[in-house]
Image 1 (tube, rainbow, N blue to C red):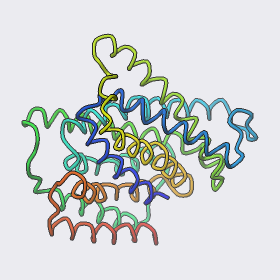
Image 2 (cartoon, helix red, strand yellow; image 1 turned 90 degrees about the vertical axis):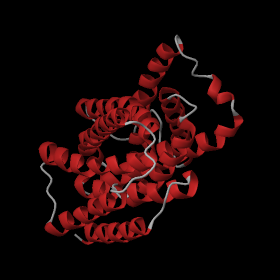
Image 3 (cartoon, one colour; image 1 turned 45 degrees about the vertical axis):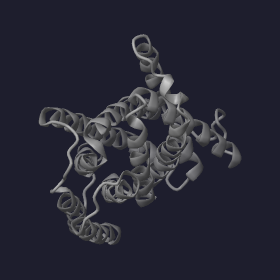
Image 4 (cartoon, rainbow, N blue to C red; image 1 turned 30 degrees about the vertical axis):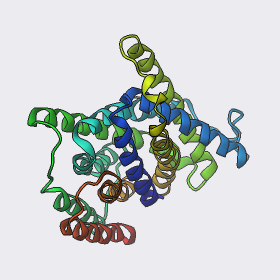
Length: 295
């Protein structure tokens, strides 16, 4: 599930990059969270999972963790990330994304006391090393150095917030490990604050900016729908399920392979260069992911 999440997120990032130049990050985040919430709600109805009358017990602390995780990871971090993506592009964003698993490992150690085995550290090192190897000779950087530093800083902040948010809700996920219906309910509940915060910001920003007109362009809708479907529905659902079934540190390293998939999809859909260096990097990263699995 964690590897599937990486693939889904990578495809979504590339699609969001295609529409991000026209749609404001706040509007894009609001759209994808709303669309994802609707799809998760429909899925819960189909599988017979109650939307409101819960058949399981979660405490006030659990609710606090879920709400805080949603506000930090969905309501705020996504907007910051989408803004940074517009500045630095998918290729550089993929490089910066390598800080995700170290952040999760750090927060999981501080908050949950998790530790990795030596072979898993080796696998994680191979994945991050492969990503750096693939991206070290980035070309056609779209912005000047000052703007680039600003975009990278925003991206790091957003990724750190996402990492903290998922580790924060990990104890709640552990209570219902293996129960896909409950995990999907958590994903849907997480989208409620993830909808409200962008909506409030959207209303405020609409007073000074036109955030609606870009949606009138029919050409962007296929990319919008694909981005929302793969990020907020499939991506987040599989991300949360994967996180519930293993240690946060292990899941985060497998999530990190999204960077490699971004390089592949950026080549297919954005015409970004795909060199021998990146082919070698993909092979190394897959070997690293295998070590994390067997570890």
